[in-house]
Length: 166
Image (cartoon, rainbow, N blue to C red; front, side, top):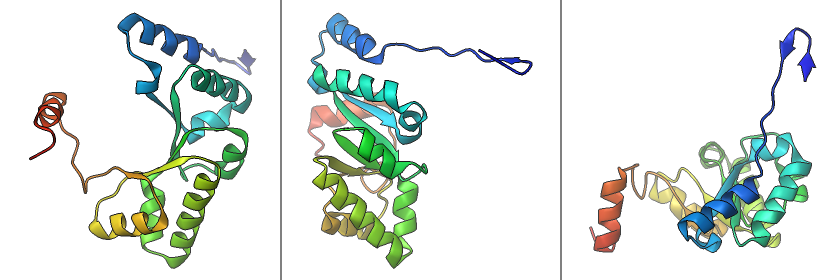
Protein backbone atom coordinates (compact mmCIF):
# COMPACT_ATOMS: atom_id res chain seq x y z
CA UNK A 1 0.00 0.00 0.00
CA UNK A 2 1.38 3.42 -0.91
CA UNK A 3 0.88 6.30 1.46
CA UNK A 4 2.52 9.50 0.28
CA UNK A 5 6.19 8.77 -0.25
CA UNK A 6 6.22 5.91 2.27
CA UNK A 7 5.57 2.28 1.48
CA UNK A 8 3.66 0.41 4.15
CA UNK A 9 3.80 -3.36 4.15
CA UNK A 10 1.40 -5.44 6.20
CA UNK A 11 2.12 -9.03 7.14
CA UNK A 12 -0.69 -11.28 8.22
CA UNK A 13 -0.61 -14.84 9.42
CA UNK A 14 -3.55 -17.07 10.12
CA UNK A 15 -3.15 -17.25 13.90
CA UNK A 16 -5.74 -20.02 14.32
CA UNK A 17 -4.08 -22.22 11.71
CA UNK A 18 -0.59 -21.48 13.01
CA UNK A 19 -1.48 -22.26 16.63
CA UNK A 20 -3.42 -25.39 15.65
CA UNK A 21 -0.44 -26.58 13.60
CA UNK A 22 1.95 -26.00 16.48
CA UNK A 23 -0.32 -27.92 18.85
CA UNK A 24 -0.38 -30.87 16.46
CA UNK A 25 3.37 -30.71 15.88
CA UNK A 26 4.20 -30.73 19.61
CA UNK A 27 1.23 -32.85 20.71
CA UNK A 28 -0.20 -30.18 23.02
CA UNK A 29 -3.99 -30.10 23.44
CA UNK A 30 -5.35 -26.62 22.57
CA UNK A 31 -7.39 -26.60 25.82
CA UNK A 32 -4.05 -26.36 27.65
CA UNK A 33 -3.22 -23.01 26.05
CA UNK A 34 -4.55 -19.53 26.64
CA UNK A 35 -4.07 -17.07 23.80
CA UNK A 36 -3.67 -13.49 25.04
CA UNK A 37 -4.67 -10.72 22.70
CA UNK A 38 -4.04 -7.16 23.79
CA UNK A 39 -7.00 -4.84 23.84
CA UNK A 40 -5.31 -2.39 21.45
CA UNK A 41 -4.33 -5.10 18.94
CA UNK A 42 -7.87 -6.45 18.77
CA UNK A 43 -9.37 -2.99 18.41
CA UNK A 44 -7.13 -2.15 15.43
CA UNK A 45 -8.82 -4.62 13.08
CA UNK A 46 -11.91 -5.92 14.81
CA UNK A 47 -13.54 -7.87 11.94
CA UNK A 48 -10.53 -10.09 11.09
CA UNK A 49 -9.63 -10.49 14.76
CA UNK A 50 -13.19 -11.49 15.63
CA UNK A 51 -13.03 -14.27 13.03
CA UNK A 52 -9.62 -15.47 14.30
CA UNK A 53 -10.86 -15.49 17.91
CA UNK A 54 -13.92 -17.51 16.96
CA UNK A 55 -11.72 -20.04 15.11
CA UNK A 56 -9.35 -20.33 18.08
CA UNK A 57 -12.25 -20.95 20.44
CA UNK A 58 -13.84 -23.52 18.08
CA UNK A 59 -10.51 -25.36 18.08
CA UNK A 60 -10.38 -25.47 21.89
CA UNK A 61 -8.14 -22.53 22.82
CA UNK A 62 -9.06 -20.11 25.61
CA UNK A 63 -8.87 -16.50 24.43
CA UNK A 64 -8.01 -13.69 26.83
CA UNK A 65 -8.27 -9.96 26.28
CA UNK A 66 -5.12 -8.58 27.89
CA UNK A 67 -4.43 -5.05 29.17
CA UNK A 68 -8.12 -4.18 29.48
CA UNK A 69 -8.56 -0.56 30.57
CA UNK A 70 -5.38 0.62 28.88
CA UNK A 71 -6.96 1.58 25.55
CA UNK A 72 -9.84 3.85 24.70
CA UNK A 73 -12.12 1.32 22.97
CA UNK A 74 -12.70 -1.04 25.88
CA UNK A 75 -16.49 -1.17 26.02
CA UNK A 76 -16.91 -1.43 22.27
CA UNK A 77 -14.40 -4.26 22.28
CA UNK A 78 -16.40 -6.22 24.87
CA UNK A 79 -19.50 -5.75 22.75
CA UNK A 80 -17.84 -7.00 19.55
CA UNK A 81 -15.40 -9.69 20.74
CA UNK A 82 -16.55 -12.72 22.71
CA UNK A 83 -13.41 -13.66 24.62
CA UNK A 84 -13.25 -16.15 27.49
CA UNK A 85 -11.16 -14.15 29.96
CA UNK A 86 -10.71 -10.45 30.69
CA UNK A 87 -7.35 -9.35 32.13
CA UNK A 88 -7.58 -5.96 33.80
CA UNK A 89 -4.50 -3.82 33.21
CA UNK A 90 -2.36 -3.06 36.24
CA UNK A 91 -2.46 0.68 35.57
CA UNK A 92 -6.21 0.57 35.89
CA UNK A 93 -5.86 -1.23 39.22
CA UNK A 94 -3.39 1.32 40.59
CA UNK A 95 -5.69 4.19 39.63
CA UNK A 96 -8.68 2.58 41.32
CA UNK A 97 -6.85 2.08 44.61
CA UNK A 98 -6.36 5.83 44.88
CA UNK A 99 -9.92 6.84 44.13
CA UNK A 100 -13.39 5.80 45.17
CA UNK A 101 -14.60 6.59 41.64
CA UNK A 102 -11.98 4.27 40.18
CA UNK A 103 -13.09 1.48 42.50
CA UNK A 104 -16.71 1.90 41.37
CA UNK A 105 -15.57 1.56 37.75
CA UNK A 106 -13.40 -1.45 38.59
CA UNK A 107 -16.33 -3.14 40.34
CA UNK A 108 -18.56 -2.42 37.34
CA UNK A 109 -16.02 -3.83 34.88
CA UNK A 110 -15.68 -7.04 36.92
CA UNK A 111 -19.47 -7.36 37.21
CA UNK A 112 -19.96 -6.68 33.51
CA UNK A 113 -17.33 -9.27 32.51
CA UNK A 114 -19.00 -11.86 34.75
CA UNK A 115 -22.40 -11.11 33.23
CA UNK A 116 -20.82 -11.61 29.79
CA UNK A 117 -19.65 -15.06 30.90
CA UNK A 118 -15.98 -14.13 31.25
CA UNK A 119 -13.49 -14.98 33.95
CA UNK A 120 -11.58 -11.97 35.30
CA UNK A 121 -7.86 -11.71 36.03
CA UNK A 122 -6.32 -8.64 37.64
CA UNK A 123 -2.73 -7.88 36.74
CA UNK A 124 -0.33 -5.99 38.95
CA UNK A 125 -1.54 -7.09 42.38
CA UNK A 126 1.18 -5.89 44.74
CA UNK A 127 -0.43 -5.57 48.16
CA UNK A 128 -2.67 -7.56 50.47
CA UNK A 129 -5.10 -4.61 50.43
CA UNK A 130 -5.43 -4.85 46.62
CA UNK A 131 -5.94 -8.61 46.83
CA UNK A 132 -8.65 -8.25 49.48
CA UNK A 133 -10.42 -5.50 47.51
CA UNK A 134 -10.34 -7.46 44.24
CA UNK A 135 -11.54 -10.61 45.97
CA UNK A 136 -14.44 -8.67 47.46
CA UNK A 137 -15.27 -7.23 44.03
CA UNK A 138 -15.48 -10.75 42.57
CA UNK A 139 -12.24 -11.07 40.64
CA UNK A 140 -11.43 -14.73 39.82
CA UNK A 141 -7.64 -14.74 39.48
CA UNK A 142 -4.73 -12.49 40.27
CA UNK A 143 -1.17 -11.98 39.17
CA UNK A 144 1.52 -9.66 40.34
CA UNK A 145 4.48 -9.08 42.63
CA UNK A 146 2.38 -9.86 45.72
CA UNK A 147 2.66 -13.52 44.68
CA UNK A 148 6.07 -13.56 43.01
CA UNK A 149 8.53 -11.46 41.13
CA UNK A 150 9.40 -12.80 37.67
CA UNK A 151 11.74 -15.79 38.00
CA UNK A 152 13.84 -17.79 35.53
CA UNK A 153 12.23 -20.83 33.89
CA UNK A 154 14.46 -23.25 35.81
CA UNK A 155 13.39 -21.76 39.16
CA UNK A 156 9.72 -21.97 38.13
CA UNK A 157 10.11 -25.60 37.09
CA UNK A 158 11.68 -26.34 40.48
CA UNK A 159 8.71 -24.71 42.25
CA UNK A 160 6.32 -26.87 40.23
CA UNK A 161 8.27 -30.02 41.09
CA UNK A 162 8.14 -29.09 44.78
CA UNK A 163 4.44 -28.30 44.60
CA UNK A 164 4.92 -24.61 45.42
CA UNK A 165 5.61 -25.58 49.03
CA UNK A 166 8.39 -23.03 49.51
